[in-house]
Length: 250
Ligand SMILES: O=C(O)[C@@H](CO)OP(=O)(O)O
Image (cartoon, rainbow, N blue to C red; front, side):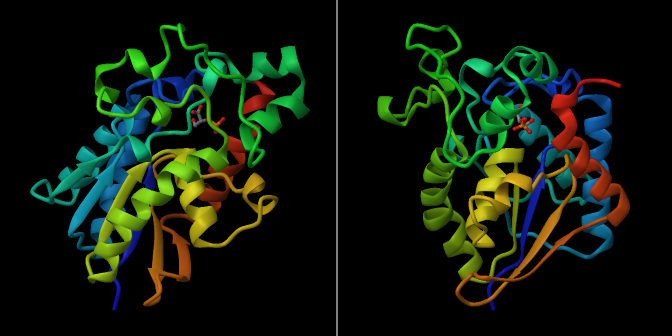
């Protein structure tokens, strides 16, 4: 029997709160985000999950969410692996811009294409832009061609998939229970692959912050079931709120 797989998007970040495109910018959790992480840990513990190892990105909003979940579950001893391959989708030149203001400037249709189309990336950062990941020490070991200046969901999946195949899938096949704490779009890439969703279906699939998603997998690691943990009405409302982030504050 393969192990259990649980995916968690980090809790609310300061830029989620400010409604800014975030991508690879390393912002921290808000107090609400820390609370969401605690609640995720509490739920997982209450349901009796016993993880064997944890995978996360190299961005602190995911790492801190993982710390809080493990603390809540009294599992801080677990082995943890961090990888840039689980980072949020790189948002290119949109990083740091307000989502609602970007709609005012470019129109809702264009912004939805940038946010949710499968294979159209946002405008790229130029190579000399100081925000380009080649200026960051944490990415120093990557090959230049691995460093994104922007990413679509498709190119995000292109870098998540090898990590799934080489690191996560073998652990699950060996029967180990795996917790993945990552980001809205790196997790949407994983969900698209796991659930074999079409390019159209994934457009409307939004993941709320801090809500654990439990996958039961068969021996070929095909999903038998997918379930969000927690109150279904609250989860639905939170996912719809993610979709509406471009509408601005009412
Ligand atoms: O800004 C981002 O990096 C992501 C996740 O917060 O946003 P969106 O849901 O708009 O893809």
